[in-house]
Length: 376
Image 1: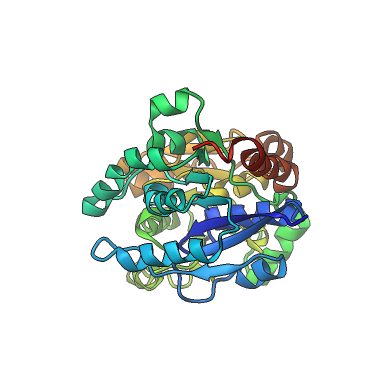
Image 2: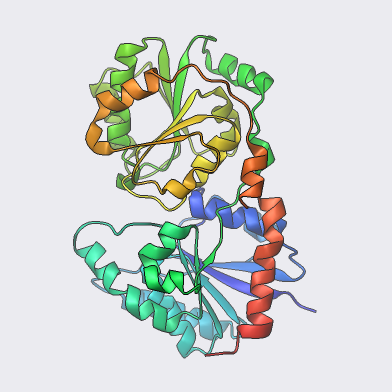
């Protein structure tokens, strides 16, 4: 019997929160029962693409969706559906813009049309207004509703809709055991980077985009370095604002204190070397990087733009961005001394471990296909 093929719709399959979570599920589901394919708008080959192909998945591409001219995107999605009439499940991860591919999926007769929320706030300006306007019609074309957390569900679907039990929470899972704290690994990676035992290492794993607020992050480190001179910052990730942040580092005179690690597969090694994990985001869903940091026992200082439900261990402190960089720096400095150990059990219990949660995700697809998929 052929597996059920699920078509996931995203911009890209480069390393990122939602993308990493999808791959973590993909690696652990029974691919004899459920297979993943991907419909992307990123024209370049993506970081996960080779692995997707090796696991039996397929990757298709359509033009980027723009407000000025949405028709190339819409035409591309429609042609993809008509070229592959075997799809019975479409799973869109593009926030309220999921309206477009799910509307077309309904027109194409695809019975299971899943909308998935990964965020908690609209962007500013006309684009944000446009996206907000799509929330209501989205609920008319999707057949199933998912979110990475409660706040993400309420933001996209509304409090009443969530309270009615219509949204399934699908945690952004990780390979939790990889992030367990190890004194030996910590020592190895710090020696590799040339850090002494006394060096205080702050870190952040996030793409360089306006949402992640790296400019504020560097201002915090600038103030912290005044307090604790023997300190460094590790920045993991890539993105469109990286060159701008590199320029800010030079302006602040921190070239020998800030390390741009790039997009790497071994994030866990660098988190072993850290003493604090910082995330001053404007808004978030439930950040996968924050779940990873908690497994490794890191103290985490995050903005109030991060949902409080992200704290699964008691290790997370939430600060207002309005307090300013000096206040953030002082809060970190005042909490340097703490006992660090792994919190694997907390994360597994909360449902964020891929090996123990993948079967539930797989079962969701099977039940949707077998029991609910043909109800329109």
